[in-house]
Image (tube, rainbow, N blue to C red; front, top):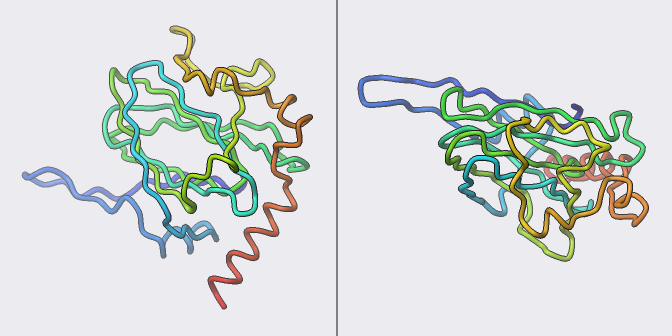
Length: 196
């Protein structure tokens, strides 16, 4: 999906364990054309079947995220919520786990969710902006109009907030969704400020 990237680190195992660089800002910038100014780091621990998301923030400034799974396994999902995007409503997913130690970079304007696949899963995410409740929004992760890839082995466990979130269609009607051109302009302005 445009403006979302999967990153697989090079791991260095030896008799003591393993070492790897799970985030490098210069590599992210070169490989994706995006930068991530770190404003907040979050960690969540979830039991099997818990779904967190689909979350997004107003653009500008939005909230870019760099997400990895430190222990266990999650199905990480990105949804293009940018009105007028060529991929509006598209869904992409990848398994993040403590084996491959992949990470995902998610640019501002894209929606993010994940489901814990293991008995317990610890997810860490670096955020470009601090949490701002007034600018944060959600789409229900069980919207029947979205092709969400949740496993069929039980109903997702949702927070009351995520359970009450609107569908994509309802959020669009309420004017909550970011617009593709606004996101593209924000990406250009952010990169121009960083380079200038």
